[in-house]
Image (tube, rainbow, N blue to C red; front, side, top):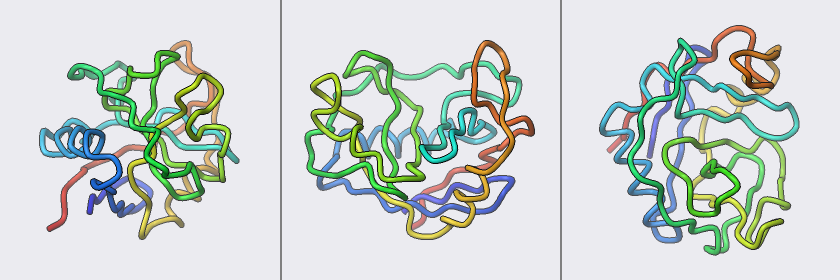
Length: 162
């Protein structure tokens, strides 16, 4: 279980290490290293998803480890309340950024539009009210990015709950 403490409240996430072992280990490693502490949910698209895990509050990218293998072929679906890895157009490019689906996004499921899709590796078990509050924040453009919250949505701390 992962707890994301944000400036909007707490989000508890249950990982599915059985179906996405590489992805879960990668995510837990970033949590243990404190990588997510003080980062933003920097992309919020109402009716789609909220994305975070890679940008500081001064809107710079945090350094990451090497990309991981895309495990989207694990049978898990991009349903509302699930967490998945963000990536570039390259299927095996996920590092630290993730998103929480705020709607059922089946077009992101394996095989997706590019033969791979986006790897789901867990689900929100508590705090969907917080996710819903975040998805409703006002957004604009910042630093060449669109759909950025006008007021920072900060992941203050991420921790593994035993």
